[in-house]
Image (cartoon, rainbow, N blue to C red; front, side, top):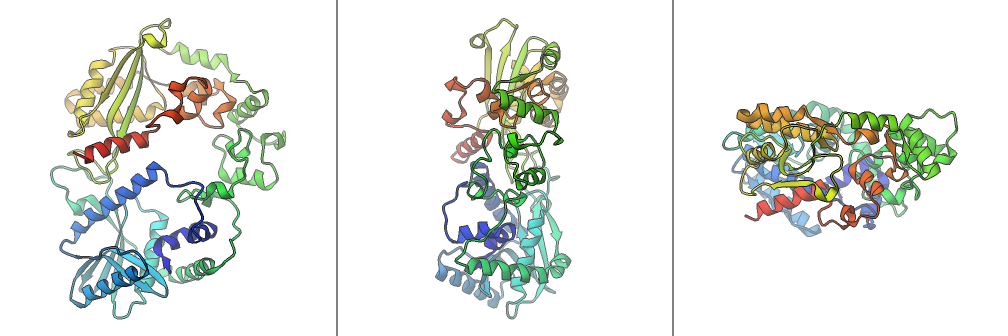
Length: 464
């Protein structure tokens, strides 16, 4: 039996679908951020039920008999006169679907598919097309319209959540009607793949990561694609261009023709690999250093997001700073262990913004450079804090005038280390510069990225 999730997976890649059906062990299992998105989806689904309160909720029951039971409960709800059903379940032509919300209008049943994103994606439309396709074959079921429901990115919580303002409705009725022939064709192909005992042959491509990352990515891609000299590591080179090189038999730097058009960053990357030493442009580094004013404040935020806002003045998926780390270097001669250090973590029982804003104004020096890695993130959060705290907004916004981005010497061509591997994130740069410092080894940290930090903070908050 084919489910909606299998249909969406099959549209992206027949091979990934087949491996999933065969229960082949993933080479790239779900990461923390993906798991967080799934949890957010459940929260949004529950909130969306308030759009049409008082409906019948069809519980999920696992197993083949469970699927049949869910369909029977749905049929009972319809026949008993229920006008709103949550998670209505149907099996038609060996395809199983669950509808987030069905609501009966005078013209027929309206279908609402609820998504936790703040915008409509193309795969949301395909999802709605399948739902309509299956429901249109259900005996005695008169359909009216189909909607995809997303979060309204403009909605700002003020008091109790207002469901009709929290969500945006996208009427896809006309679209799905024009897509029915394509859905039929896709279903036939996907069913054929699902029944086959032979693993499909699918070339690698952009579909391996879009619209969703594939949990079998490493199974299909070249074994050397993560090596430092792989053409797939060329910095920000378009995926199609990388694939074009690969399909020509050019899989490593050494095979690139001399007349191939490459950026200066690519040339630095290739040269650094060839000589196994950093490529250094002292003029660019000196120019960066000349703009630095002491004291230097090395600054970094950690944030969380909520799909459903819980604090007044909060939007869906808004980045909410809850922690910062601050190291202050008064002079060029100051050693690392002599730096002044401040840190802040918000009370899990409160909106963190006022407290963190006041704390950073208290601890940041009144002058000097504020240094962040990828400064736009920190500056945007400070702008958000200023919007939230108008009485101290002026002082907060003045901080943004002092920022410098520590990524500039690296991404701007001042320093390229062959171990960067075609990236300039802090997780690429730091291990390359400090390979023997265990304190700076992300692999040995219990919480090693922002997603894990956010998840840990929210987990503590949820336990109160």
